[in-house]
Length: 304
Image (tube, rainbow, N blue to C red; front, side, top):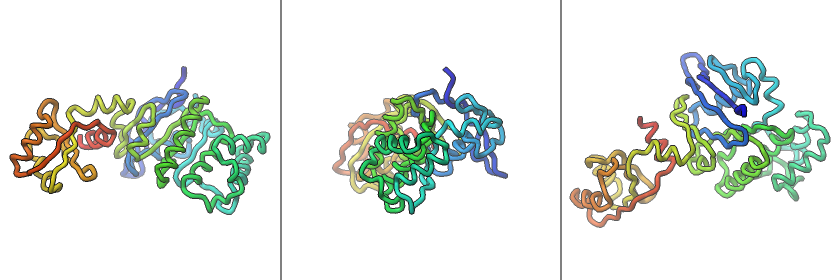
């Protein structure tokens, strides 16, 4: 089966700045594919090249079988796109926004399709609310609805839940799973570590480079070659500095009211870390093994 997206050595340079640096990946039909990285890491620039909005400096890319260099006009009718700052008309109601964009996309039987999207996204009963009066979560849900009006085969969601509360984010992802089950392919970017866990496969972007690509679980297994511990100790900052100099400790960071410590494989146990802290003059401590997270993966990759 042909990939929904195929990219090889894709590069975009603005003057002396390389925004995307020789990125290669493929997205399979029906997949939730994610890019995780901070603002400025090249996520949005990559999407804009795939949509034909930006011309790549070099490299190749195909979206739904069409070349991004020469067939961008064939790509756009088949894809949906939404972002953190998606352009909704604040003075129009939810249903008026959906109807307007359905007209822009040339949707046949507009009223029927708008009604389908309203039901799909759970907007029933709120159709008459003006877009400018919506909370962040409902506004993003409406933006997703706009992107779905023309029944796209592929959805590009660029930081779709940025600034949205956790409950609304979870509801948004439930909608994404429903769309994928119905056959839609989704390419999503995020800087939320917990949100990245929802992706089937995940690429870690930093400073324009794709540092790693695999399932979230595989990334944790392949990138993190050590043990992870949560340490309760006081005073916290003094213990952080002291532990950083202990043999076998790779990294120490704050984790709420505790420390998160990464050690070389087999170099420490909970007892040995506790003994090391006591030897450094810290009294009552508690050390427990912890599960790896994508934040651990990201920090490790960036550190390299």
